[in-house]
Length: 321
Image (tube, rainbow, N blue to C red; front, side):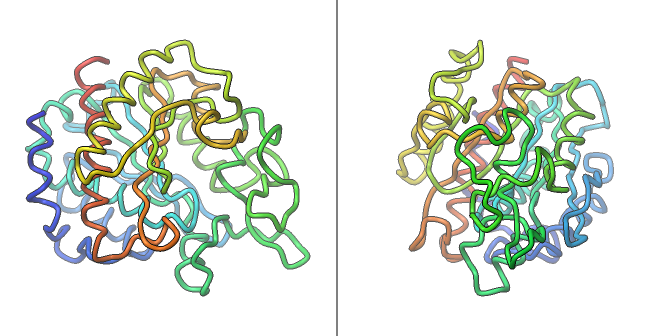
């Protein structure tokens, strides 16, 4: 693909005028970057206010639409759902860096596809994991009582909610919440997806760090969408692209088969409710001591790697949908 060849020489470039990809950004810096992209590329990018977190932080998306043409196939990307997965919001931000700041390298994609990218779906948990000496915090920051906080947002979506793989214990890392979409963060994503479902062709959840390309369903190892052959074929292409970058091996398969079965995921909600052609979780490469703590000095190769995988999906949509 011609459009992918540009990435190796861009990976060290500064993003815009104020931020670089040599450190993990704060939630405030992520929002500032979205505003900067809109200011610099007003005919390509616009901010969408998705909702507000438990602690009052904005949840925002960037809409990327060349010429603001509304009826193109739409790709929605959600990142930063789990707090400790810092490489996820950075990956989404780097994807925006590529397709917006270097739009001229991706004409085929941008002529045929629109994007809605939510780089940080869980800003409260993300900031807590950054500042509270609790690097492995995974949940949101809802007040659950008895000194317990947070919902596992990846277990709170309203498709077969609370049927397998989660916990009803408010202190558990896998707490499913008090009801489907009880977390304002998942409710905001639900509303965004529903409002844009008419043109939705691809939904991508960027998580870390199991090095997998997963398709629905996460609640069962035995249940697949009707177009599972297409999902598997594209996932194999994405995995080959990812592995070819730095030698990390990426595995392909159904989410409920390769990971412990769990209901309430975003991909199950999208696939089960709206049934777009393509729904995936991309589990990024693992690094550091826990898999989640990729050192900042190595971050560039992970961001480039994930962006290659994303662009393989985007180009497939541009050429086939």
